[in-house]
Length: 372
Image (cartoon, rainbow, N blue to C red):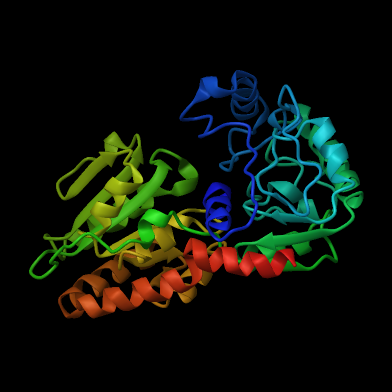
């Protein structure tokens, strides 16, 4: 997201530089930063409580790059994900920065360890007795929250941004950002999805669903719930199909279900052209860009009523949300029944409303107001 924004700012004539620790993700390129990979592994398999489903950053939070990224000397410093990315020299430089804009992408900036608290509200007091980690790590988590609060208090001109009202509300209720205003501003989608959709005639085709996750086996993404609802709905509509995109998920292969594996953005764009609905049944989310990316291709979002996802449905102008997995079956059958009456014009309308909010140009223009 940060790279997309920076590239758009450069196209619009702004002098914008992108600083980062790794090019991809630790999952995709574990050797890109071995120290961070080891720290993330210790967090996941040794420090995290096995019953807690969201990711944590404890040791990784304290693992810093070998050298500073060089964030001083700019008119505006725009921060994104900070866990394990800032050298002490960068932290010191930020205390003297003219203006800092910090876009929050999950809850980690204002918790002691977790990226999603899953209903825990200890981040509003002190993260004592943290349920996300084993008992041996709980004092470390509480101390980490104190250190974050101390550092944030030293940042002079700080503007907070969140991609959803939900995350903004969580931040303002936290021990670290209590009393601060948070600007709600959407993240930009990949420019590829702003291009015209691949031509596809959906006339006569069966109702097609897609679910996308970095890892289909991640319990937080709750793909199993989507598959279960699909199986139940397919008993009433045998022509319905489900496409699963992401790493793993081979156990979900079944009649009517295609497991595509990991796809490039171009391949995913092509798949969207032949798809009617995107289902996101995650147990915790902020504002996943796959919702806007699918909607930019005319694919209607069907999302669980958690985090900022229902808000995204409102923003794109079409879609459904559900509070419980059993509601998803009914929604899929309802949409399948109305599938034949949904025209190309309906898909075009969804695309237009999505791009007006989530295109890189729209987001960069909005951030220009935040910077000033």
